Image 1 (cartoon, rainbow, N blue to C red):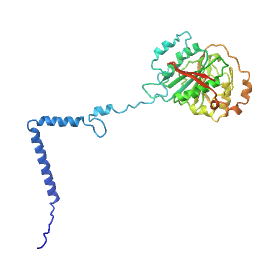
Image 2 (image 1 turned 60 degrees about the horizontal axis):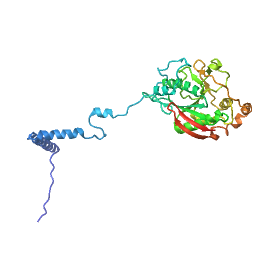
Image 3 (image 1 turned 90 degrees about the horizontal axis):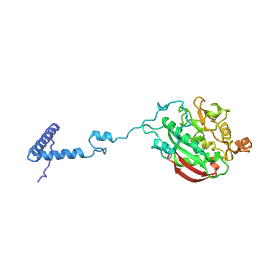
Image 4 (image 1 turned 120 degrees about the vertical axis):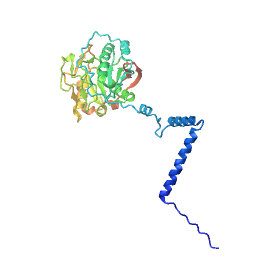
Length: 338
């Protein structure tokens, strides 16, 4: 017997499409008849509810309004020159400086830190105030400094660094210790060292970061609103964070009043970048009256060899000990032994 030969014959392609369309139409017709039977309407409603509440592949509900609400909010950078600035400020030395009143007026300030809520600040600044036995000055300074910084839309944190004990004052060591401790607590871009007895009179003198070190207190009232000499860098001094480290900070050798700022001027002169100064019409500060401290009798001799000491005398070689770090609300209080 001859084997049976099976021959496969294909339908023409157009005939296949006709068959498929007929099958699809029949399925739709049967589904419609099924849903029209008693109870079919309820089933259709359940299917629609399931579809509506099921998550899409993107993880959001199919409701477009809900998807929009879950998108992250884009916060724009704060203005470089905010419209909130007022210019010259009249410093009233008789104004109330009660700290409890100040805390109530600024409930959003904690650990001395504040940042704008409606925009992203372009600058993150640590302000270090070397301190000892000047509470009235500190209260007056805080009374005007916080509002000024907030008008400037700066993200800032104030550190009041107090030298413990009754030994001879060493401002350079206190400032270096403040820098090292602030760096552990706050990721700042630049640091401003601010004498406690100076109150800014013009909010156009902005406490923001600059490409170069910047002398901000160019015109204090005690000097009749002028700069006493060309290389003056005392009072209020602003440094980019990395520049301060490259300069090795302030000298640790100046015990008593005076000398550490002039030594810093020598370091700046020796550096390739130098420094800039705020014009005197904006760098105005009210100098708060205080008694003098004992001058350092060795300051002249130390200044003569400042370049030789710079690499080994500064923030990199500072001997100090932190006794406490306290939240005083309007500032972070650091008590140090130097």
